[in-house]
Length: 384
Ligand code: GMT
Image (cartoon, rainbow, N blue to C red; front, side, top):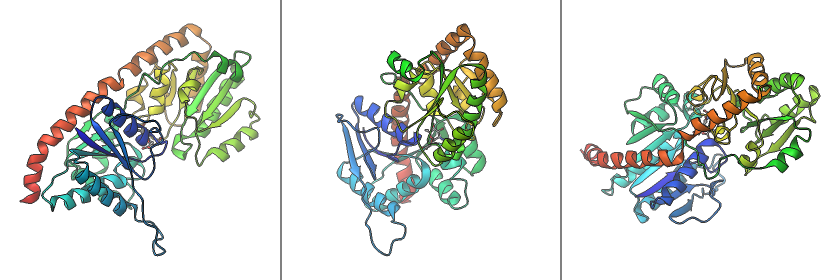
């Protein structure tokens, strides 16, 4: 198949999933065209069957807000026609699903039907999408997509609760590439980070409010009182400065390291004993799955899709949102019992294996085939 993938090129979860999916499909012989405004963060090496088309938005003094949607639509029309694409797969509904609808209409005038699959990732529904500033367009463009997928059952339920959805939403879970995410031998890192054999706790996120990094630090503060340990804070974002201030306030700057954006997260997960993700909203929690693939158990909140990944009492522990007391108690329980920790490490890996990329790719291929078949009917409906 010739597939166009539209995504955000940043380090955010949806862009990562879109890029890894495209690379996986290309490795299976499909021709994959990424269309976005910058080279995707995870698309930095040459790969056969992978193409990248950059959207450049015209700068003009009149535009206080450069019209990216229009530029993206024009680029998509061009790429679909000249690369002869079979399908467009857009990741993150805003604005990609609405832009894809416009592209479909433009091409229809030329007698060509381009099927569109929209993948919902989370905040495009739960935080941003439901906001009145976007809601009508999000609902409309989901209903106008030829296929819609959500990355968890929880996100599917939320979408159906928030919007009047006529389309069937198919759940295709996010996935893990075990060629990259697996337990590596990085003992020299461990010695550098925790020279006295301290336990290592880790958190990876974009440091937005929704990630509740303050809860991570509060949990660590409590664990530190009972067990010698270090905390790795990986990633960057709006809350980082405030969190650095908090570490100073509680006097734990020597124990907490802010590592910023890291390309080789798996090397840091390899030396970690516990992963903390206390998010206020999380449709899936790819960061937790990546930790589990590296045999790191997870302390998480029980919101959104997290309970679909992290199994309470087996791969880690779940607590109510904001219950840092309980999160810390569970962390202490696990970190002070070697046998239990080893068992949880094994369970975490076994659970992560259920989300192996190799199992998920065929699900997308089958879904694309189904959508392309259906598009003949959709074409007739559109031209009637
Ligand atoms: O919030 C983020 O981490 C970024 C955001 C995105 O779309 O870029 O992530 C969402 O999509 C990820 C990939 O499907 C999911 O793993 C995250 O759970 C989801 N974030 C939220 O729901 C808050």
